[in-house]
Image (cartoon, rainbow, N blue to C red; front, top):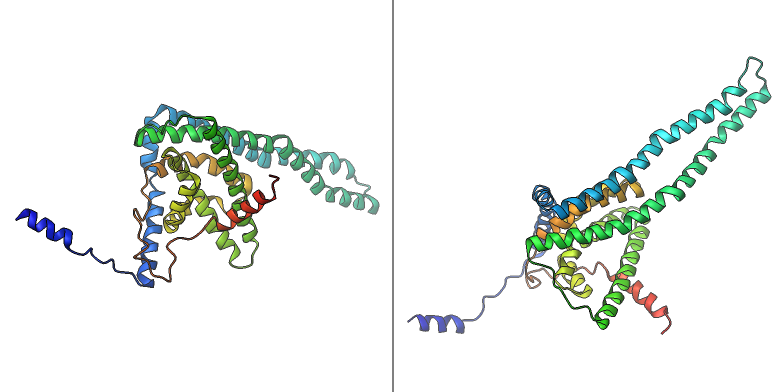
Length: 323
C-alpha cells in the first residue's frame, strides 16, 4: 500500500507555481529589502563573536585605533585645535600690531587686504596637511585594513562553518587569481566612478547614486564569505544581482551613515564599522534563498544587472590593452 501511494505521488504532476502580479511582486521585493535591513541590525550577535574570538577582537581593535583614533582623531584635532590656534597667531601677528591710535585710511586698507589673505593661509595649511599627513595615513590604512579584514573574515567563517577551502596554489591558479583580482579592481573603480558621475544628474542623480553605494557596500561585506566558499567573480555577481532587493536593504543603513558626510569622515566610519558588517554578512542568509524567477511578475525584474555599466567599461579597457 505504501509503495502504491509513493508511486502515485511520483506519477502526479508537479505543483504549478503561481505567478505573482506586479503589486504582489513589489511587496515581495519590499519584504526582501526589509530582511536585508534586519540582517544589517544584528550588531549584538556580531559583538558577541568579536568578544569571543581573540583574533577577531584584536583585528577589530586595531581597525578602530587606526581609523577612529589616529586618522579621524587627527582630522578632528586639526580642524578644531590646530586651525583655530593658527588663526589666533595670524590675527595677533598681522592684526594687533597694525592697529594703533593714529590709524589712517591707508592702515585700514592694509588691514582689509590682510584679512582677505586669511583664506589663502587656510588653503595652504590644509593642502600641506593633507599631502603630508592625511593621504599617506589614508593609503597606509587602506593596506592595513585590507589585511585585517581578510583575517577577520577567515576567522569568522571558520567559527560559523568550517575552515576556508585550502586550494593548492599552482602556477596556473596563481595567474588566474591575479587576473581575477586585477579585473575586480578595475570593476570596482569603474563602478565608483559611475556612482560619482550619476550623482551629478539633477533631481534623480543623488538617489540613484545612493542606491549604487548601498549595493557596493553590501557586495563588499558578503564577498569575503563567497570567496571562502570558492565562488569565482562571475558566480558572486550573478548571485548578488538576483537578490538586488535584499542587498539594497543590507547596505541601506551603512550608506545612510556615510553618504552625507565628507570623504575622509565617510572613509573612517566605513573602516571602523566594516568588521561588524563582515561578521553580519557571514551569518546572514540572503533572500530569496532559492530561485524564484518563475514567481516574479514579468513587469518586475528578477535580476538587475547592477554591474553592467562597470563591466562594459572594463571590457573597453581590456580591449584597449596591447595583446
